[in-house]
Length: 142
Image 1 (tube, rainbow, N blue to C red):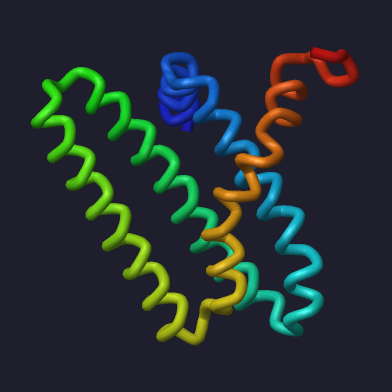
Image 2 (image 1 turned 180 degrees about the horizontal axis):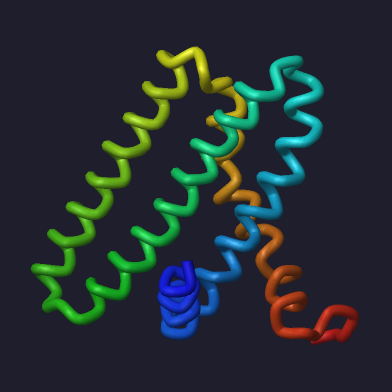
């Protein structure tokens, strides 16, 4: 367990600050969604599992997109275009697979899966607030 924590700390240190803020935003948004969503849906376990699947997808997508962009910057122009298309194709296939899993398997509530997937969009909106919180500047102006 200690080794996992140490490798996670090393990854956070060398990662992009925006990536960390987006992941924190995704987690905050999904926690805020899962509580009322599980009450409204009436099926707490399936909604939470669906939300968890959507959250894993959202975190994977943000990390994959960041890695793809960083790798593209080191490549020549013609290769970077092909690399970007390949990255997009991977994310598209994963998106379709997650949606099919959410629709076909009854252990996942599809609304939870969908809201977890959309949490990427919402986390971008709250990223400035997350930045203020993580930088220790909460309450200070710009």
